[in-house]
Image (cartoon, rainbow, N blue to C red):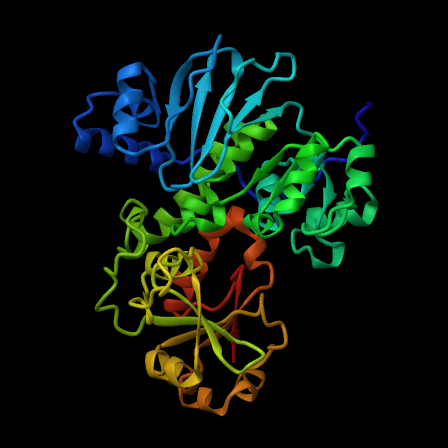
Amino acid sequence: MDQKQKKKHPVKGRKIGAAGYLLLLFVMMAGLCSCGGTPADISEKPADAAEQAAVQAAGQPVFPDIPGLAVSKTITPEYAEGFTLARYDDGYTGIRVTDGPFYLVVPGDSAVPEKLPEDTVVLKKPLSRVYMAASSVMALYRALDAVDEVDFSATMADSWYVEEAKEAMLSGDILFAGKYSAPDYEMLVSRGCSLAVESTMVYHHPEVKEKLESLGIPVFVDQSSYEKNPLGRAEWIKVYGVLTGKEAEAEAFFDRQVQLVQEMQDSEGGESAEDSKTAGDDTASGREGRTSAFFYINSSGQAVVRTGDDYIAEMIRMAGGEYVLSDLRNPNPDSRSGSLTLSMEEFYAGAKDADYLIYNTNIDSSVSSLSDILAKNSLLGEFRAVKKGQVYLTDRYFYQATDILGEMIVDLHRMFAGEGENMTFLRHLE
């Protein structure tokens, strides 16, 4: 089938450049680990039999032996915990997703190997007709200037906050192909869909995944939402660099996000990006005047907040603040959700003295003013942040902006510093 001609969608307002900070981190880690190698030795390690055995003994993901192919190196992320990459001979790449299948990315001019492990999902390039059912991944494609690799969307045009995606849908370059729970299978098959990128929500509809695969459409399930570290979420761009053939661009873009955070922290002695790898540890005590809560009020009048080990709490900590509900954890040990629902009385007890309140308008778009917030519950008027006029709203683009979470951390830093101008994701309610 001939590839359709599509216009390129530029990366708006993004400067792609390599940051020296990660190189410094690699060197420091090499010294700490007494590895005696170069920075590349840390992130791209030779995968011999002894190493594979050691990795397996440590409970880490092991890449399978494939007849005719050998793993030349493994690539371990710096912040993300949900994936590991492996280089096989002849341009093949393995993607091992934690608690997920093994994906083998096969070059377009190469054959699919025989006798693959049972859990292998083959992704044969070119993967240029993508059904995007994981909305947070679109921003990563945008960052790679690869929106033109997406032909189908599970999100309607008016629900996109990634402008390039909205424009592509309005122009007909991206077609609505049904919600993630009810795809238009006929459209996807007849128009040659090469890959379905799904969020973990597809596991609530296993019949959808099974149907897509039975029709010859491989499914990649993104698990970036499970990352506790915000830079870990952004680091998933490296996975999509593999799928789009833009690995160098992915490395450079991610380096820039790390550099933004490091420059901000260096300017005021905040927690370093290196320290942030221990996400969820409460080391932010004593930050007077910089405590914050992140919430919205649901239709039942309850407060929906983030747990203390969630990535939003981690962003607040990385920005030099303290998440006021840092001790809060999900009571279900098997749940990966970073949200909890509290009664207003519970929320008041835990957050009434917070210096800043951040209201999540991405979920509750009915709020645009302080009076709208007070109308939710009069008890909110007794919160310190409300009395001090230190209430902020998130931009509705926030949850789709996986690519620039570093800029959200900078916004939070500006909030704590009393610099309410020129923010990307936050708006101060006067």
